[in-house]
Length: 204
Image (cartoon, rainbow, N blue to C red; front, side):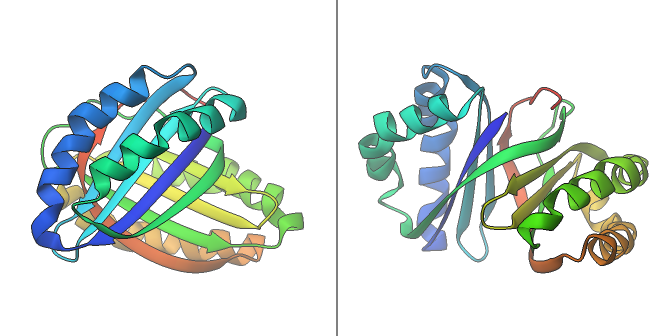
């Protein structure tokens, strides 16, 4: 599985309208593209941040969809987005999200690691970190995304509600600290969002 993430920042007052357009029209446009396998839409309404993740069967589908939808995507995001960053990932681990009710939360961690240590980090996450994280109450889904060439990693975790997201912080921090030390990784950023939309993603 392959993922494209789009990270946009802008005026918080303009966020809701664009988020709704992406949730409805944007999802319909993506769903019509060959190879589409799922979508996540996450918002930080206070600071004015939108994160869109789309899942694809293969790299060719991901690239073709980006080119096919570039003009329409720019039009939809224009009322809000002042900055836009696009990243491409390989899904090393993906666990299916349960059905999420309104108020679900999402945590995103970005890490840097030497490209030669990417597989060590993936193995550490899958064999050691994941079994512990999956025991945390309220966890609804989790993924580990990698960029092998640039030595970049993104870990996204969905929680059933805001309370579960908040309550998980201490336990997850401990797991993250142990994993990054073992794999010689560096945590670059830690963010939390409200879930606007999250469709199920198959196991990888």
